[in-house]
Image (cartoon, rainbow, N blue to C red; front, side):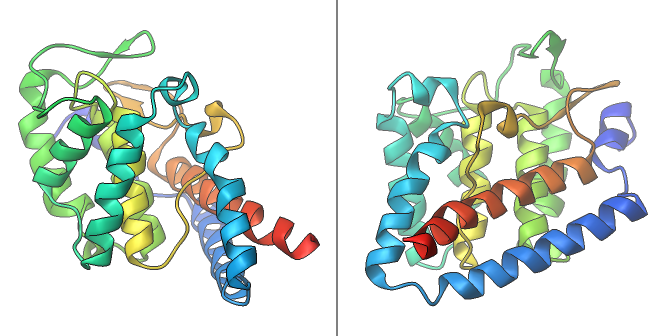
Length: 232
């Protein structure tokens, strides 16, 4: 598969990005160990503090339309408890839940990421096939945190649905994280959740930058849950 979009999505990390990624992973792993020492009461209080920061990934959620978000979170929690990992049908189901519809399908019309047109509908099947085979599986990546970051980056970049692409990509990343015992993503500002590429132009991130941005969002979750809990 050869296109400018594919080249953008598969661009290798620079040495500097690789070094930063390794450093952030070490910090997250350290904070995860510290989190294991929290009492049940501290852990519960930390998760309560975390909830508003998770909602900042979407303006729709902030405006109060949270039923779909809650349903999707419940769906993912049940799948994680059953030790199941996301598949193609799960992504469709989560998108349908986010939009409070009975079912979802891959779009057949153009959509835009800001002012830029996203992946053309006729190109989506081959990109999604590559995504399901090479980006979504955890065992295709060097670390679960990297897997979650790239899965999110690819899905939101392709924008395969007419709506709720960002929320769906965050939820799939959260699923991968939770399945390996990590906290989900959270965001200090809505801008922190912006991530993606388009054909022939960069919106906000190369793959390396996308991984770093996602890792910072995971680290932020630990700061909210752990640091404030320890300060009490």
